[in-house]
Image (tube, rainbow, N blue to C red; front, side):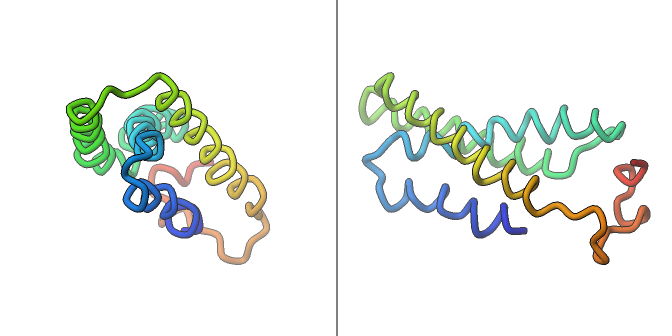
Amino acid sequence: MIINTALAYPVYVLPVLFPKKVWLGLAPVLMGFGQVLVHGIVFPRLAKARYGPGFVTALCLHLPIGIAYIRQIKREQPVKRTDWMKGVIALIGFAVGGIAAPILLLRDKESPYRFTKQQMGPYGHQ
């Protein structure tokens, strides 16, 4: 919840506030492309499941919106190599600071609020 709300919202809002900074828009677009792979391949394999929650959203929303964004910015102006590099760096920064760090720092295997195996479905086998 913390990652998908408090930490991710700025990643999506900043490009709206600063539309001329193309690299700010590339970071969430690249993150969306990554979500297609992570939710569609990585998570299901790790969980030995056929489906990863979030895959349909990533495939049907993140992917086409990201493709449309890239097409549009290319129509408006040439996208500089530095924009791509800054976008990738911003993506890596968010992946580390906004996704991996909170997961690692806030996990608690002894939490009294753990999900049950039934709630986890195919992901509850571990």
